[in-house]
Structures are given as structure tokens and as C-alpha cells.
Image 1: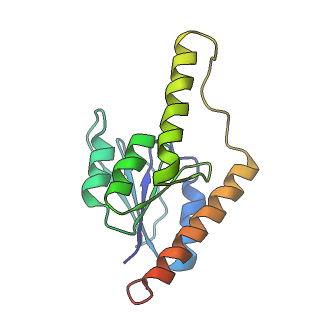
Image 2: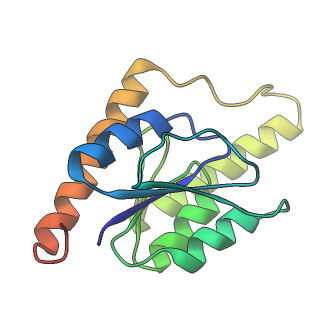
Image 3: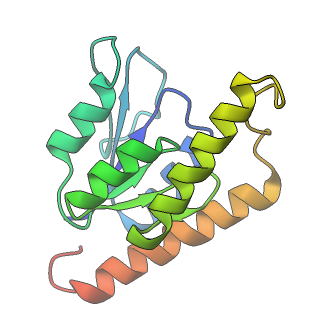
Length: 155
């Protein structure tokens, strides 16, 4: 069964995922380093993992199945999940693909270097309404695509 995993500690689109998952009757697992409030729904679970670098990422990679969907802004996590056969969508609605992941990593590295030299300060811009809209569209498209490919296993 199609499952959605959320790299939840800093995810700005949790509510959007809940709405879409409810419409499609999909299970959602949020993975975080600390407790957070989640809706009281049987299909939403929170997995609190230990603190430490990549602990949440490692948990997601260990549990993700082919054709699950992972919501993350973490490029290395997206790459690891895709190697498991899962789909990965960025929190701004950017779908990660084998073709785009190298470009995304190169851009991330360039921006990190520019931040290190002081030419760029601050983090990513806040999520805009169009980002949320793009995210919802990409999530819906990913679910529909998976269901078309596996019509008997996606209830």
C-alpha cells in the first residue's frame, strides 16, 4: 500500500500532506527527532527517533518501500530514498528525479560555498502560496502516477 513519509522536523507542508492523504485514504508517518502535535487520526503516526545526525533519515530509508512517497527538503535523503524505489518531493513542490538530483546537489554545494564566503546570508526564503500550490500539484500527480502503475495494490 502506498505510504507517505515526512521528514518532519522542519517540514512546512505537513497540513497539505494530511489533506491529500485523507482524500486518497493513505497512511502518513512523520519522522522527527522530537515530539510534535499531530492530528488524532488512525492513519497518521509520529515516529520519534533519537537525536543525532541523519537518525531520522536513516529511519526513513530503512522503512520506505518502492513506490512510497517521501516529503523532504534534504537532498541526500531524497537520493537515498529514490535508490530504494521511492518517490521524493521537495517541500516547495520540486520533485526529485534521477536526472535532476545531480543538478540540485551542485546548486546546493555552490550556495553553501557562497554562504561560507559571506556573499549570501540567511537561509531559504519563506514558503510562498505558489510553492504550496506547486507542492500540492506534485503530490497529487505522484499519487496518481503510482496508482496508474499499480492499480491492484493502491487502495
